[in-house]
Length: 177
Ligand SMILES: Nc1ncnc2c1ncn2[C@@H]1O[C@H](COP(=O)(O)OP(=O)(O)OP(=O)(O)O)[C@@H](O)[C@H]1O
Ligand SMILES: [Mg+2]
Picture 1 (cartoon, rainbow, N blue to C red):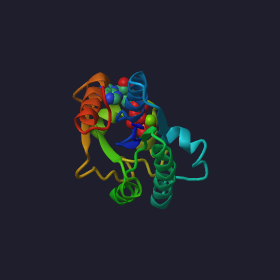
Picture 2 (picture 1 turned 180 degrees about the vertical axis):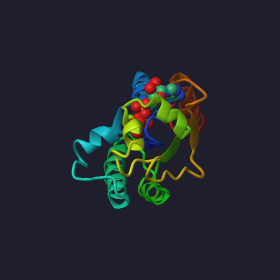
Picture 3 (picture 1 turned 180 degrees about the horizontal axis):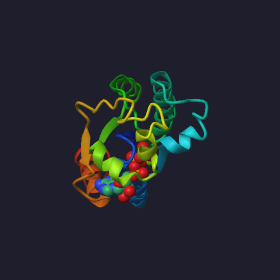
Picture 4 (picture 1 turned 90 degrees about the vertical axis):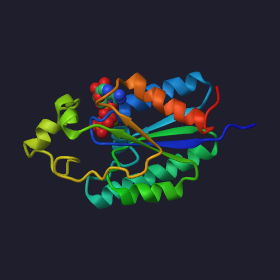
């Protein structure tokens, strides 16, 4: 039987752990023999979405384009992992509607913990007023109300978050083995 593709959509604020989880999870799923593609926000902003900024409208367009590509890839059996802040519920609802096998993963972490991590030094700049429209500081983040999976990255290391996701995918028949 051909393997069925699906889209794992990682949403969460900057520094919550989307990229970390996406890249390690991709490696684990490849080791299980799956074809995996990661569509990461930062990379997309340098390519497919180079023309987009951070207004609500542009963030929604960003999500819409990524959903289009993700859905196409998933039709061919690919596991697509999207790592994108996707702060608006309305945008996440639309991408869910556009993708038949859609799994929303809330990468949950308090903003204070993310700001303390400050992986890219962006919180310091945002709080200093250097970056407008920064999610969680000067722009909203609407937390998911009923995501398929929630991982709490202030309470567990990346390996534990990945185990939670892999277990859910096994329990729900998305992956074997
Ligand atoms: N359970 C966890 N899952 C993922 N990352 C974690 C976890 N616990 C701690 N971390 C740490 O949190 C940081 C997350 O940074 P990462 O770049 O992955 O965030 P991001 O959500 O991709 O942010 P951005 O939206 O800015 O790209 C890393 O330093 C990572 O090691
Ligand atoms: Mg990232």
